[in-house]
Length: 345
Image (cartoon, rainbow, N blue to C red):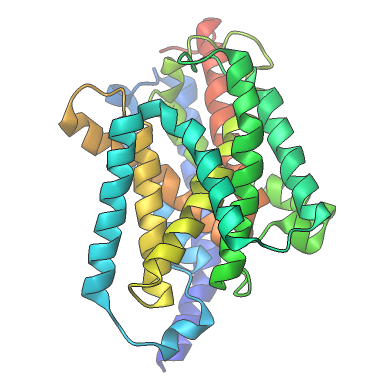
């Protein structure tokens, strides 16, 4: 009977998500077209819509992915919680000490992981990762809010950052057994070009309500640099790079560490949660007040990081890249319209 309820629930999840997606898209699009877009003005509409969309999406995707072998192992909840808290503390310390300099350390850490694991790399995987890194680098030239280094330096950083993060992340997923469980796969490497392009397009389609949530909450108001029509294409940089190091590499690394402290399923959930909210915290480092930083971290992590994490795990890397690209491209596009006086702040 329980299995029947579970199957019935899963069958309802798809239609429920479709309805939530459609209603949220229509409401948010109408609000963005007719009202000023800022957190104070639009938060009352965007926050409930974003939370409902996120809950429906996670239900549709199946919640926390659990590798098959998890059911055969014992439970070590306290040890896993302590390990996850310790990992989060280390990551917060790294941000505190190195700030934006951690972007230069991630390729070094990824290279060290590759030396440690010595995975059997294929030319196809290496060239694909390199191709994605070059695309991210070229797109990075169009990002205008990076000020701690020059645009050329930022673009150049994307190549080792993306390339090494993807290779090391895939090696960690393979070593940990997540790849064998079908989690976090690259659609291109597993099923070819057509599957990768379809995944990218599906990701863009899925992301529309979240992209509108970002706009209605005033996210585009921070992008005064976006004044040319082509600026939305620069969203390929965060769409590729942040999925490479913030999802594939970071979640893979955390899972390998936390797996020693608990069962596969809970360890993966803990790795996703730590990575998602730490990634969200990185977007708040310039927020002056601790309380505001904590609130922003919770909102960004719940509304944006968690959906991306589970889309990557369940629907593949290219779907997550498409989702991330759409969110930022719509934001940059709205910023262009605002800066040209077409939309109201």
